[in-house]
Every structure is written in C-alpha cells, then in structure tokens.
Image 1 (cartoon, one colour):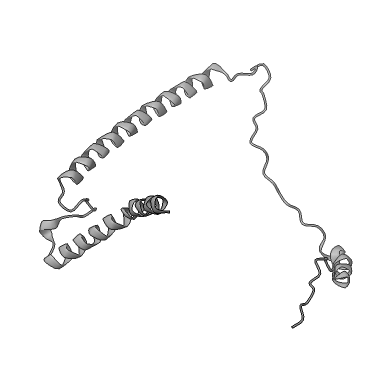
Image 2: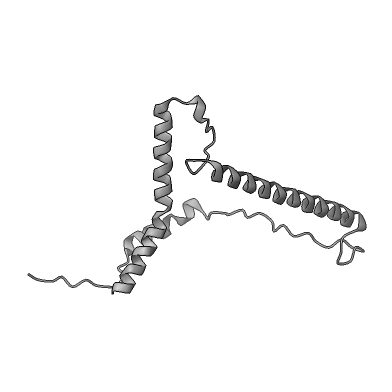
Length: 140
C-alpha cells in the first residue's frame, strides 16, 4: 500500500479570481447601513448632568422599580414557602399543574404516579453517579 502525501499548501484558482475581478464593475460594492450609535450629546448649558426635571423622573422610576422588586421578592418567598409545604404534605413527591387526584380515573392516576417516580429517579441519577465515582476512587 502506498501512502499519498498531502500538501498543506493553499492552491488558488487564479482563473476564477481574475474572472471575479473582471465582473466587479458590473455589480459595484455593497453598502452596509449601520445604525447611529445611541449617544446623547451634551446640551449646552446643562453641564455634565441632566436637568432637575429629568432627575426627579429618574428618582420616581428608580423608587417604583425598587418597590416592584421588593414585591416580586416577597411573592417569590411566599410561593416557595407554599410549594415547600404542599410538596412535603403530598404523598407522591410533587404537585403538577392541574393535579386533581380525586377527579381522575385510576388509569390516569397510575400513569401520573409512574411518571413522578421516573422523574424522581432521573433527578436522583446525579447522586448515584457521584457515589459510583467515589466508589471507583476508593477501590482504584
């Protein structure tokens, strides 16, 4: 068997390059329109800072934003507490949207319980892999 020696040199298709250069005048150059940079130039007499009216509106917006953030954090904490209490009291380990066990037939309930068990096993896989790695390190 013979081995082919591959060349690592670049081979230019000079005929194609000359053809493309000769056709350049037919199409011209592409113009790319770029948007202006969103930079606000300084207004004369205003100095480095904005006017007091703008400062007031900025303060109002920042206080409104801060209030909304505090409300969102409080809501998040209450949702976390309610979901923690519902999952700890639930017998199958989790609450799915539309989870009404008393309204469902036994077949749907069995499928849902099987799904929840598979989901729990899937998310527990990381700990099993970690344990296997530790066993391998201890024995190896």
